[in-house]
Length: 236
Image 1: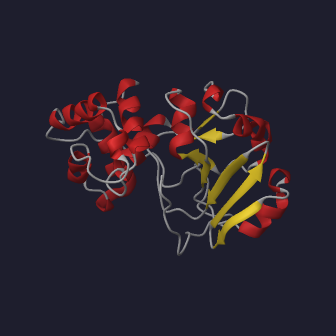
Image 2 (image 1 turned 135 degrees about the vertical axis):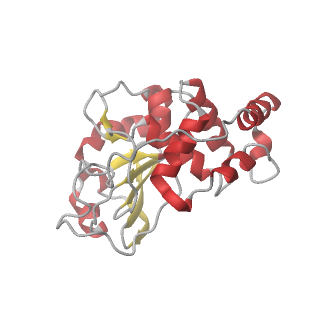
């Protein structure tokens, strides 16, 4: 378990925090908020919960007290996104049936509220996501990951283990040196140079990062043990 950096949460998210213990344990927190809770490097707003298990969005919506009076933003097969009010808007997303494995073990927060993806898994997803979108927060996250002690090769090796042939490490290196898309103009000159230097010092071969499980939480892929079908991977 680890002590989360709750100071990174805005007031509405902090108010909601004690209620998150209701969420089933097979849902693991991923995304920017998971990383910010681990590293404390920036503020983050949304809670994105991932699961290998197939779930019924309607049952979750009506079964959790914290979602009472929630505004539904998306309700489709294996995806539920809602907004709740706690003195301000808080967005929560639940994604089920995801065909993703993991390279580390999820950890509970020290207060026992939720399960959070390992730093290595979060690093792998960030190395992959910058090849799919151009958002400055992802680049800031990668810099924070490297500053925490993980290397870029480790992050890319994790991505390769998690995503397999879907992931192209060369696209990560290319993304780290081009800042003309999205909101990447928000990155400071120092941050851009740090990213360029990371790409330039990348090892010629990636370390082998073993996949420890084909499920996100270590249980079966779905409540009946079947393999999830027709699932889509969310943005991380």
